[in-house]
Image (cartoon, rainbow over the protein chains, first blue to last red):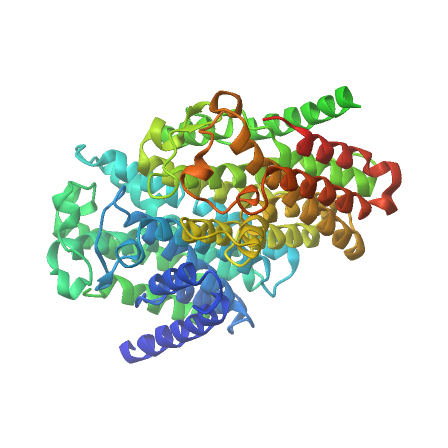
Length: 296
Length: 296
């Protein structure tokens, strides 16, 4: 099983990388600096988990990988990368290191890093507008994704809550609200948009949404725990940073042991939402299981 | 004529303001700070020229203002405002004043200003995904707009060229490339997307594109001249800034007199593209004429 899920993830990551390679202008395209900066961060070793989740959600619906879905995956990855570039800026988390490499602003300066993040968001929506599904599905996907990266229970809203809650006492409600928005919303919409791309009905979309909500929270809890228990070299970024900046995290509220139990229970609940799909959902489940069991 | 165009612009601006008011979350919506920052910049007294151009282009095609086009206008204005917020940041133009008010980062801090710009871009695409035109037209509009605010001959690309060309000797080619991308592309796509919303054929879209390209360059030339000839109080922003930072501008290459002649000629050429629409294009022409004749 473990060898299987690794090759399944690798296959999805390769498809995504190939799409990203052709969708982001080359470093020879004027103006060169911004394309270099976009590529620096997009090809910094991300695991392409959101694209893989979108692909496996599509398989749960259509029983096969729909043609062209790698472009949806590439757009999701561009949005994820844009958020990392802006999070790392001096005015925000002020991080020098990301996945073991200099952050975008360290390598290209702050101005270009701000614009590279901006441009990745733009390019993501441009790529979405060119998806090979019916226009009504494309419009639906764009609306869902824009909502998930926006301010109201979306990625940017979560980032704002996160900044504002530093040095505040973390309550369970606050931690869950931050996680649901900051990282959960994009994971959830990755799953749902993959399903919509494959022709999901409203009922399918609601099931995938439930799966994505539970699983996304479980992934983030595991992330929080790893930040406390793994050193920087293994993590590829500055470990212990959440604790140093007094971020509102799950283990800060519940402790490490309870956090791991919560993650395991959330995954069980997430899997229940996929029961109607039988073995077609095996790939999606395997990827989710892999993500909560990972050690870095 | 002059009174007419003013009321036409005012009417379009009012429609746009009303749409923006309902489309941007209120300051009571959590997280409050970012919605306050978005509103601070969106309601800082912008003239809503891009929405008005979109509306009048739609009238040239459909002979009436199509239902719901104010949401397209609002999205264009959100994109314009996002670009101003990020341009003003310390790492970019480092401006304290915009339209006579503190810039977003001066009022809300750098972190929230970066995220408010991000969020306005996102919300723009979300609003576009909800447009009341057929899905195929919506997808077309989103693709065109994303392209126009992107890195290849688009708004962000122009911003990068602009930064990189500071303190370089401005050549005619460089100045035109910056203007065409940095401000021209969004103006051009405002006109074209207004037409597509109203049901423009490919031939109509090409004509509107030609009009938008010429008129957009003329507006920017006039902007450059005003920066040199009008004081800060009248301009509502720091005057003479282009010269102080040795920006590549039209008058820096051609002088003020020739710049004004070029703007007038570009407007004549732009108008020629609208000949097939007869009096239906009168509104669009009047707005363009008003923009090149303005004094601040």
